[in-house]
Length: 398
Image 1 (cartoon, rainbow, N blue to C red):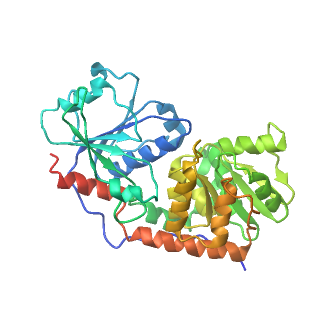
Image 2 (tube, one colour):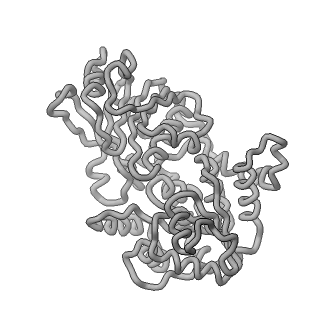
Image 3 (spheres, helix red, strand yellow):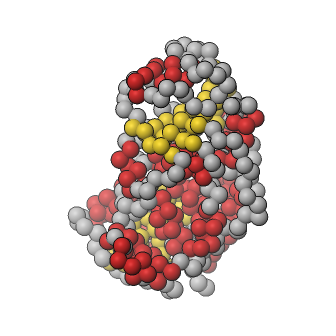
C-alpha cells in the first residue's frame, strides 16, 4: 500500500460575500515563539484579501522579514514600541480594534480608542484556539471595561474554534486555488524553472520538495518543541527508507542535542535529513502538502495541518499545571481520532509511556481518512475572517 497522497481542497463554487471596507487595528506581541505573530499576520492578510484596510501593530516586526517578506497590499506594518504614546498613534482610531491573545494595551492606546469621534466601533479580544466546551459558552460574550481611560467601553470575546458555535478557523479564500495549482507546480521539477533569480534558500526549499514528492520513501516534516518521543520517531525512520524535513526552531535544536553535534547529519540510518531554511508562510504550507506525515506544534501550524489534510501529530504547547492535557483530549475527541492516533498524540506529548505507533502505510492511510473527514466538517462552517466581517457588519460599524 502506498503512503497517502496529497488531496487538495475543493474549489469554492462562489466568491466570498463582499463587505464594506473598514479600518482595522490589530495589536500583537511575540511571546516565546512566533505562533502569535503567525496567526495575527494570517488574520491581517486574510482581511486585506477581503478588501479591508489593516494596521498591524507588532512589538517584534523583524520576524515578518522571513514570515511575510513581501508583505501584502492593504496591510500597514506598525512597530509597537512599548510603551506606545499618543504621538505614535494615527490621528483617529479605526473601526475595529483587535487585542490579540491577551496583549495589554497601554493607557494612551485605550484613550485613543475611547476618544474616537463616532461612538460606533468594535473592540475585540481575540482568544487562543481550543476545542474545550468553554469556548462555545464564552464566544461573543461582552467584557465591560471598568477602569482606566477606556472605562465604559465594552470589549467582546472572539474565540476561534472547531464547531459552528465558535469563531471558526483562519482559511484564506485563495487557499483552495493554491492547493489545486500546487499539484502541477512546474517549479517542483527543479530550481532552473525560475531562471536566474532563484535565491539559495529558495533553491534548497524547492529541491527538498522535489525529493519529497518522489515516490517510495516516507516523507515526514518536523516542527515541534522537545518531545520525549523524538528518539523513538528517529529510530523508526532510521529503519526504513525515509526523508525528514526539519523546520528551523526548537525541534531542530533538540535534534542537534540528540545527535551531540552542532550540525544536522545528512542521514540517520536509512533516513535522509534535510534542514529547511526559514520559510515564509506559503513555503511552510507547501512543506506540509509535500509530506506524508507532519509533526506540528502550537496553534497556527495545527490549523495549517488540518487544511493540508495529511496525517499529523500535534505537539501542544506545554503548561506547568498540565492544563494542556485536557485541551489535547478535547481536540482528539473533536477529531474523532482512532485509538492509535490518540495514542500517538499522548505519547508524543509525554502524557503516556506507551510505545509510539509505527508509521506504516496502512496506518497513515487510516489517519488521513480521519483528518480528511475533520477537514470536510470544517469546510461546512464559515471561516474566521468571514465570521469577523459578519460580526462587524451586524454591529453597524461605519
